[in-house]
Length: 105
Ligand SMILES: Cc1cc2nc3c(=O)[nH]c(=O)nc-3n(C[C@H](O)[C@H](O)[C@H](O)COP(=O)(O)OP(=O)(O)OC[C@H]3O[C@@H](n4cnc5c(N)ncnc54)[C@H](O)[C@@H]3O)c2cc1C
Image (tube, rainbow, N blue to C red; front, side, top):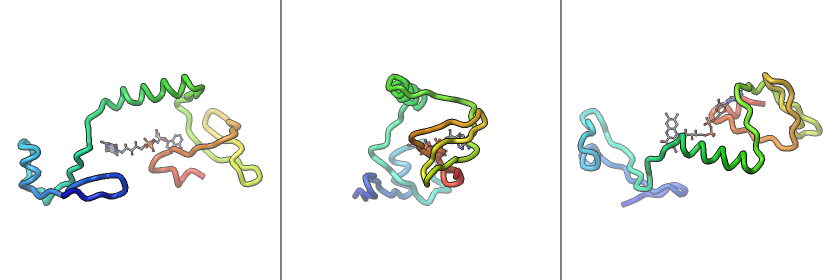
């Protein structure tokens, strides 16, 4: 039976079931695993390239080797970002620093 969390369907498997799914898996020290039938293998660099090409075609500009230093606010809104390459004024600011997002303020 599949369990669902938000949009993700999965099944918790014991070591024997894991071995049935993947005979080369060493299950000797495993208690179990999570099987997600909708999982797939993709070429992540190709996906990133396509997404970045589409973003650039839509007007996005990428700046690399640039470290975020500080947010500059005006009237409670982000007005600019202080970076290792200087200050960048912005109409909109999206924080997409992954796991360290909460530390960037
Ligand atoms: C080992 C591992 C395996 C994974 N495997 C999968 C998988 O198979 N399938 C899947 O769907 N997901 C997988 N994930 C999860 C997936 O990688 C993340 O969910 C996804 O990368 C998050 O994307 P993001 O853009 O939010 O953050 P990130 O990809 O973390 O991007 C954040 C960016 O912010 C930059 N940054 C941080 N601080 C600063 C700063 N001060 N100044 C400038 N830049 C900064 C970082 O350099 C980074 O480039 C895996 C994660 C890990 C760790």
